[in-house]
Image (cartoon, rainbow, N blue to C red; front, top):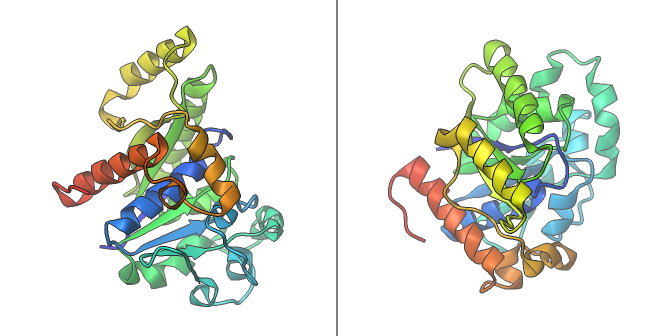
Length: 256
């Protein structure tokens, strides 16, 4: 199978890393081999899985390190991690002068395609070179969105970037789906933003939504995905539902 999915949104604080970590973990529980690739210099996916790497994706992108040498096992037998580190913050500058700078990550991941069922990329909250590398390497893009004032503007910019990449560097990329995160439909603004997104992108929205959930928010401080922190929480159940929907879209009818 070997499908590559980029989890991307240039706006921060929308649950991007939470989604990358917990969707990866939930798919892994379904006994699919999953590789989570952290290309965000904040390295939140790495710490969220308890990773304490010696080397990181920076050493692969900028140096001569083999990507297989930095892959870390996690507490889930089917989930593996390519860690990030703060040193990746300098990669945006260092990539500028490299040949095929937008495709460096793809060239590193291509050797792993047959070894994993799904490779999930956690991209930085920007539209810089690291995010573009994630989009060029991916088959599809999963877009977490919080129902707030700037959501539509952010989606428009991201979709414009995806369109340019499809026309130049990656003609096969498509939108896996838009995922509503940290959902609280009590405020009028949240309801209006959701309705506006549904009006413009109705055929690209996941049926599953992720609620605001304290247990989900605190899980990263324990270095665990939510299913290992509190499997009975609303957050864990939501990501199980998302994994089921995701696998059904990609593999046919699936029940977790």
